[in-house]
Amino acid sequence: MWEKYVEAGSVPEIIRDRGKLSPRYIPEELPHRESQIEALKSLYMGSLEKPTRPFLQICQVIGPVGTGKTASCIRFGSAFEAESKRRGIDLSHVYVNLKIHGASRQILYGHIAGKVAQRLYSRGLGANELLYGMLRYLDREHKFLLITLDEIDYYVRHVRDQVIYDLTRLNEAYSDGALNVFGIVFTARSTEFHGQLERAELSTLGRTFMEFPAYTSTQLFDILQHRAQEALNRGAYTDEILEYIADVTASPPVNGDVRYALDLLLFSGNLAEGRGHDAIMPEDVRRVHGETYPHVTSEDIANLPEEERVALMGVVRALQIARDPYVTLKNIREMYKVVCEGLGEKPSKEVEALVQDLHDRGIIEIRKLTKIGMTGAPAQELDKFLSNLMDRVRGTYP
Image 1: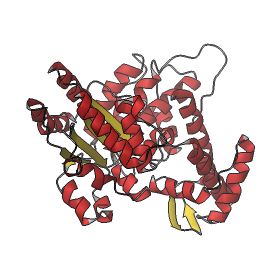
Image 2 (image 1 turned 180 degrees about the vertical axis):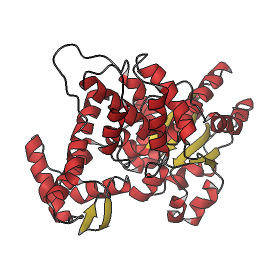
Image 3 (image 1 turned 120 degrees about the horizontal axis):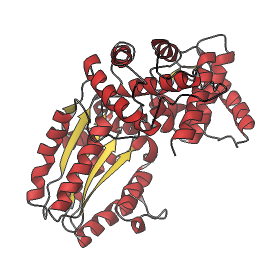
Image 4 (image 1 turned 45 degrees about the vertical axis):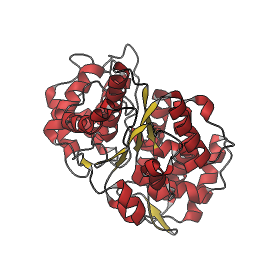
């Protein structure tokens, strides 16, 4: 695999700042997403003219994985917050990754309320108490809010409750005073989740959305150039290397996922450093690409709670010893216990829920409880890949 092979003597430094290639880094410039950010500004900036009675504006941001949805929403939210403060409006942008903070309505509303003011959060309060307590606080303190809920399609599949109904009808439901929420931005990979919504939810959510298409090879090259200049040392890469990574990423089965391109650049740099080279070579990229799986990126692993990471290792190792491409839930439950014993951790009793969550995140495939697998990934190599990736995530991201 592509772990670092540290040789004797000094190892040339190719990567100057690994954080600039991480999925959690949001650069100041987002090439080829300027028009989408401008569209968000045109939708919301006008509401700052009459902030005392803002109209709740709902927006859907739709696009495949790795198309810059999250980065664009966060970059826009920061700009909107800064412009609001420049005009003397006390507004905050709250971004929520529903894969991390969306286990239930109570957890979600508690997280948002805690971002507004820490004292608003209490484990003893129910979901509605948290939500309306926050709205009363905003009204009383003359504060305002813009909310981005990332991965709403995952939330709808995984939790299946009335969050969309609650939030899109705040204007109707909150009658105590002014509704100081300018808008809510929902992001999703596609509009397929609409099919799981009630008619009333669809009505207030609306059918219009802002589209984020997959990046082309040329666009990926521009993005990689920007990131390489920030993250790598001069002379450690060539335009030809970046073009190769862009071409690989733009082609099936990756289909333009910029997260994969950044992983490929980072891991190729790690491999080249470990070999004692002073620049990334085509062979480094070929080797990493051949041992990496497009449907599992460092962002996917970084966003997994620790319990799900251990459960994923249980799935992978159950597949490794199986003769068939699929394993049963019983196989996974037994291997999960073995993995927990090896790590010195107490096994969860909710193994089925953990496996279902991995499926909802698009990491594993469930045909039925007797047919669970990971398409297109040799289990032995995937075991090594995930072990490396998990170690790397733990060492790189807090």
